Image 1: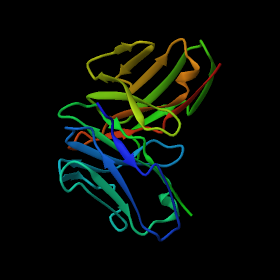
Image 2: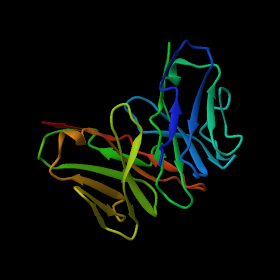
Image 3: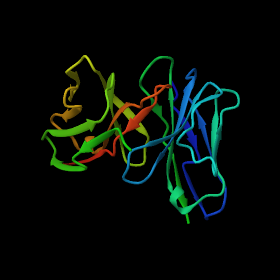
Image 4: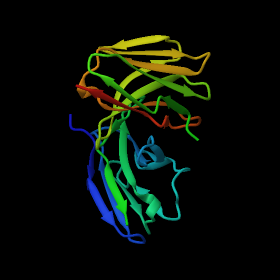
Length: 113
Length: 112
């Protein structure tokens, strides 16, 4: 089966600009997660979706970050406006049914100058 | 704060040697997972161990779990250069939604 797809793979922007990341989950995976991974650290959960509904977004900086999964399949994560400290890899992961295993995409590496 | 913390942060060994990485966590869990991340890639699930299991094997991987000490270890036997990666433990975050909290990871380098 095809894995989790993410695009773009790399993005360089200047601070205060906007950026959007896209994730296409494994077919049939109802649960989708967005993580932020700062260099040298483990992934930190930003938001979790179950189908098109938000399960948890308590760690999402809502003043600048937003995410949606309108049709319960693809998801986008947006940052507006970006700050220098947003430089990180943004990982999308999905999970099927009651499985505990999460399947990760390759990530989008963001550099904010 | 992170639920799991790996130790050591970095490990460098020769091919053929064994590599042991440790993970400590803070709250009660019903399972613990280990993931690998190659440079520039996403994470890949390696193994899951449940709270009623003390040891689990998968190929060259051996995972132990000591719930009384709130710790787990990942042993990679007969390491290969291809095992060079970062290894993370992950535990269920308290609350709903089957969310995971990842540790800071151990960066393993296996020299040929």
